[in-house]
Amino acid sequence: MTYVDGFVAAVPNENKEAFRQHAEQAAEVFKEYGALQVIECWGDEVPDGEVSSFPMAVKLKPNETVVFSWITWPSREVRNQGMDKVMADPRLQLETNPMPFDGKRLIYGGFEILVDR
Image 1: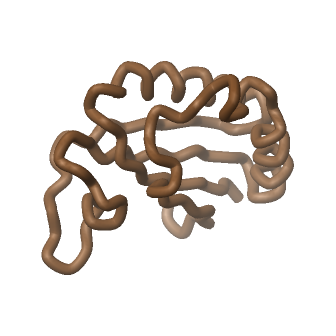
Image 2 (image 1 turned 45 degrees about the vertical axis):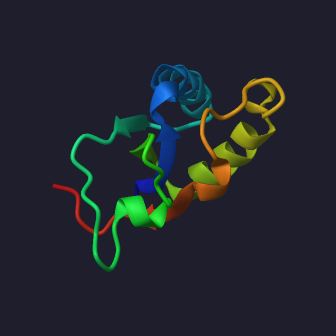
């Protein structure tokens, strides 16, 4: 059964192009290690909430945009094996490929698909 990793982050507006390039490079690595698809979305209509919201979750600052991303994998097993390889890959190490956003405010998780139409 297909497995999904989901991500929400706050990215400085001035880093939009740097983020896109970082995401393109990361997508190549994820796909090399078994990911089926990598989607990166730049927030366009992401409202503030009163109780909870994407902006609140990532502690969005005025000069930032919410990014919503997901990676699909053939299975959780492939994801676990692939993710271990991605994290060890020298192309994505912080020293050589720093994230153009605050990784401490990155929200992520793995998800089993319940409905896929």
